[in-house]
Image 1 (cartoon, rainbow, N blue to C red):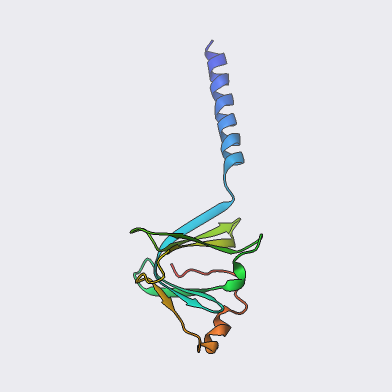
Image 2: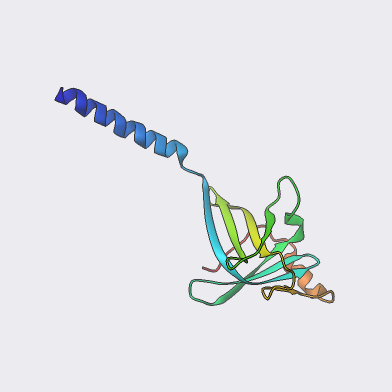
Length: 134
């Protein structure tokens, strides 16, 4: 009787380990609060605070939005939690970003980089990944 209980527990442990390995997601997600988001004809400039409470920024090209294999999407909403972003890595490589922006374009977190900022266009060119300053 004791041997059969022990065998059952060993099988249960092995099955749990196999199930856990099979259900582990290949994704890793990091979510952070946005301080400001600035629109530009070529994309968005996102300003956030890192863990050291220092300001950091990254650029999201407009070409990343709106395709079946898009690297970026925007979810509009309202409330105290907005704005924030989530960056998704799959198997250690950047996969996509989701921006959660306040739907009110006059919200204090929203801004516009203006139309005469062609020198900023280079910031959006050749961007392939998001690198966070944590």
